[in-house]
Length: 430
Image (cartoon, rainbow, N blue to C red; front, side, top):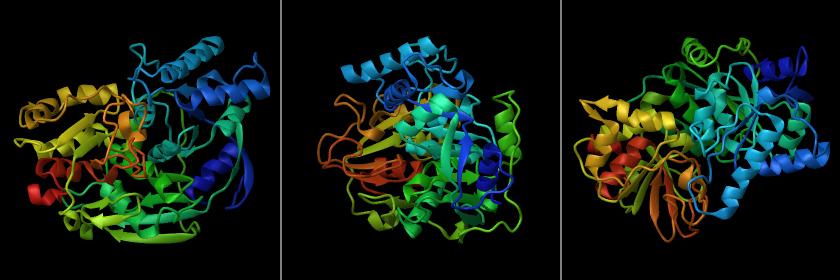
C-alpha cells in the first residue's frame, strides 16, 4: 500500500484498503477557524443536540485567522460564537485572537504548535488543510457538514483515493523555490489533473527541502484537485515534530513497489522560475516571458507564502534596494513576525531590510487579503490592480476586486517584481 492507503487503513481498523474503498476513518484532529467554525458548530448542535458534547476535546483545534483585524461586525460575531462554544465545551486548543494565545494562520501554526504528527489523520474546514501532509500525515479539507459529523462522532466516511506519485530529483538551482516546483506541476497536469487523488511527492529534491518548503508543496496539492498531498517523514520531519510535541506517534511509509495510478518525474535542475497567470493556478508561464506585465502591487503572505523562509527569500532579493511599487508583507504567524526581527542577513534583520526597501508597514499575522475579506482587510484589492502574490489562488475576485489580475509567484519572483514594477525573473536581479 501507499503511505496514504496505510494511514487510512490503520485509522479504519482495516488490514488492507484499495483505491475506491469506502471506509470509516477515525479523526486524529479536527481543525476549524472563524469562517467555517460557526457553521460547523451549528450543524453539530442541530444534529446532536444543543447540550451534546464533542467526541474528544483534545482532538479539536480552533484557530481563528481569516477575518481578524477588521471592523466588520459579522466577522466579530463569528469569533464570539467560537468563544462561547469553546467555553461551553471546555476545549483546550482555542487560539483566541483577543488574547496572547492568538497565533495566526492555521496551516502554518498547526504544525508549529505540535498538532501535526506523522501517520495520523487531520480533517479541516479549509481546503488547504492538505498542507500538513508535508509531515507525513493524511490531511484533507472537508465541508462544514462533514466537520459537524466528526465533531459528534470522531469519524468520517472516506473513499480511499488513488495515488499519483511525483518524483523530483536533481539539485535545486539558486532562486528556485518549492512554489516554483508546485506551479510547474500544476501547470503540467492542470487544476483537475489530480482530482480526488493523493499527490505523493518524493525524490532527492524533495528530501533536500526544508519542512517549510515541503509545506508549500503540499499546500497547493488541492489546486490540482487533489484529496491530499503527502511526503514521507524522514529524520528532519521526526526532529521537527519531536521538538514540538511529546505525544507518541508512529510514522508510516509506502511499501516498495506499491501501485500508483501514475508517476511523474522531474529533474529540478532544468526548471526555471514561473508564475501562474490569471485566473487559474495552472496558467503557467516562465517569469522571464512575462517581463511586459506591469505590476501595481506585490503581496507576500498567506499559508503558502508567509512563512519565515519565504521572507528570507524576499529579503535576499530586496536587500540594499528599493521597491518600485506598493509592496505588502503579512507574516503568517506571531512566530514568523518575531522571526522578522530575530533573523538577520549580513547583520541586518529581515524587518530592517524590508523597511529600508520601502515596503508598506508590515501587517499583523493573519490570512489578510488572501481570501479577499471585508472592505477594510489589509491588502484587499479594490480596482483594476495587477498583483504579484505568493498566495495560492488567483481566481477572479480572490483577493477582493473582480477586476484585479493576480499572478501567483514565489517569494523570489514577487520580491524581484516589486523592485522593477514589472514581472521579473529573480535571476535578473541577483
